[in-house]
Length: 329
Image 1: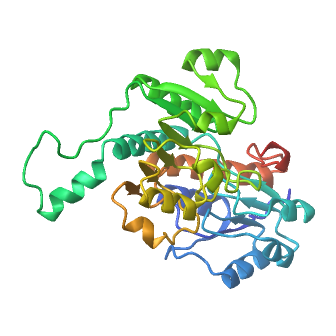
Image 2: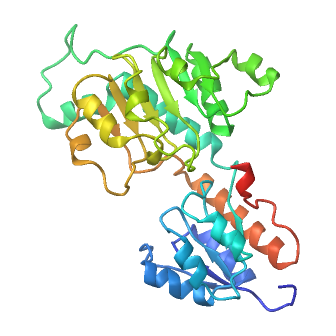
């Protein structure tokens, strides 16, 4: 792909106008102006003609689709950080490079995680619903009591870019930082955050006031918070998840929330999204958001710019800067 012909790029969802315009200038680009998720059949058609596919998290690029792709497809430049929607092994076997857009969503997602943490502990969404319902009768000394977060122990599951950014915010709110990670972070970062490392996830879970899920979804993290581990949490503990719904056993979580075995949850992601467990919808102690943790205009443009750079670098015959390697996940 080193000739001068513009590569055929198929984009599966509507991207910011400035990004789509740049793609039209640089590549032979097919856009999705209706922004409706492509069906499996439509994805297969796209992959039959595309030299570069630009999917998003809503596109399940499984082995069957990859094996049915045309021989000209050499790059999947995903618009997003997570790559659990792409069968990386199948792509590697077909010689298809996969890239993502790391780093640009760190601050946005950390902001939303902190917002969910506060909203859950202080019952913000529940209070807002009370006012809108017309049933609020005025201030009372025991009305809508939540919990202060200052002095509470925050357990971060996954101390990567987002986990570290969250820790900095939580420190400013007077929280005590704890974390579990595949690898202990650099001593300087640990010292900066005054963070306590737990090699045992079970031991950390049993001692925290709030748990934040910030690890990626991989085969190793599927239902990492299983029913057994959820039962280790203390009844006053809150859970916040802005990572992937599959990391938590959602059925067990819902059951425990309904029984008061966990104090509450703030969820921006769901195990079978966009479907949401109907039982979750009926719980007042849960804040539910539509996977909007990274949804800022600035963040989406930054993501798109990374996609453009990855495609341009690859089509110019160089290694794209954000290539995803299975061994690093």
